[in-house]
Image (tube, rainbow, N blue to C red; front, side, top):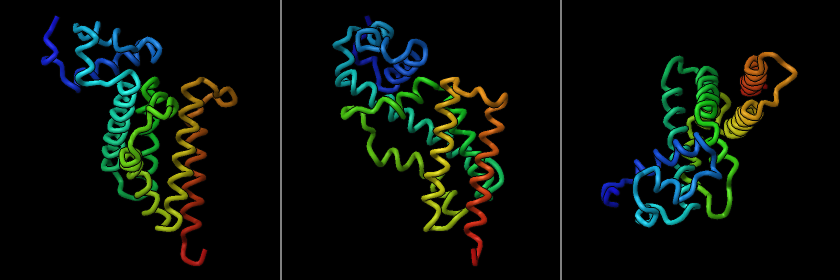
Length: 193
């Protein structure tokens, strides 16, 4: 078996993330992770305090990955806030579709021991909040950002659960809802409105 010093945090989290996506959270234990890494379980405790800590580290890694995707989407194309918000929404959906179990862990599996630091969550949402502020101003921007985040998260959660049956193209319905929300935000921010 490899010596524990050959382990590193990134390898542990990458392996745990792959196991999570392949087999789900119930199959991910310290013992199964150690076996996958080719070490004994006690070797992991130098890097991960417990299973809850492992899940917390996965959540933080997921938020960092989402933030990187949002940053890339924000910078890629038209700088108008509406175009940025559309790209940010798409990046969020793609993150969830690409990492469905990690997405569920990040946004659904909260316990007192699994609470990412508020600073990480704020930094993850910063691109959406800033684009909404650019669109609707300092006062309305955070409200618009929360509305957009709710719409995108709700759509994504329902989509991953396979709960769309009224529409053959749920993504088209989502785009229609997002367009309506953004149109209303722009109209509400016009001088004199």
